[in-house]
Image 1: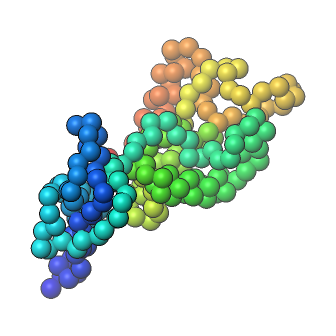
Image 2 (image 1 turned 90 degrees about the vertical axis):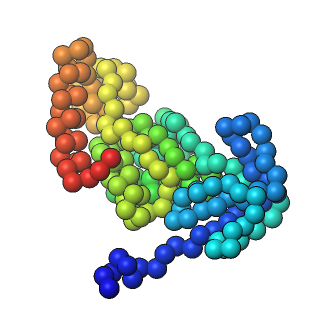
Amino acid sequence: MDDQSAAPHAPRVAFTGSRILDAAGGRYLDECVVLVEDDRILDVARSVPQDFVPVDLGDRTIAPGLIDGHTHVYLHGNLLRTDFERQILKEYPSYRTAHAVQALQTTLAAGFTTIRDLETEGAGYGDVGLRDALVQGVIRGPRMLTAGPALSSTGSYPIARFRPDWRYPVGVDVVDGPDACRRIVREFINQLGELLRGHSL
């Protein structure tokens, strides 16, 4: 017997609550159960099948997972100007990653099962690494759609008004005009080719 066949199967669970939100139909369903296997919703039924473990959620409403279409898990706190500058200029990437992992756990606990993360503000392809860690079960959090580094034009990034004779890091790749955009996109494609080698999207 190989290891795969000997691995225990996750229980099949039937969740019951006071009602279920049917987001597609714009209505609530009463006296229904949500059937789940291996963290995937199989169906919505009227009763609990014999081979499912019932879990009663009491008077709670069962709703589909939420989607946040604009997040930055590598930014944390209230994000006043001073917060933003401290994170970009002073904090270690590993410290920001620890906050990002915490943010992912908090986001999932709030009911968001998918997020679209729009660049890492100076942490490179850290979002891609977090996405892969989530897929592999290393950390817990929502499904991530990632963007990697962002692009911006000269003078538009909010770290400004420091000494003009010094150069400061910024959280984006600065490009001006179509030729510069083409160049940086080609670099991204080359970098992503290495990052994605051996990974499935």
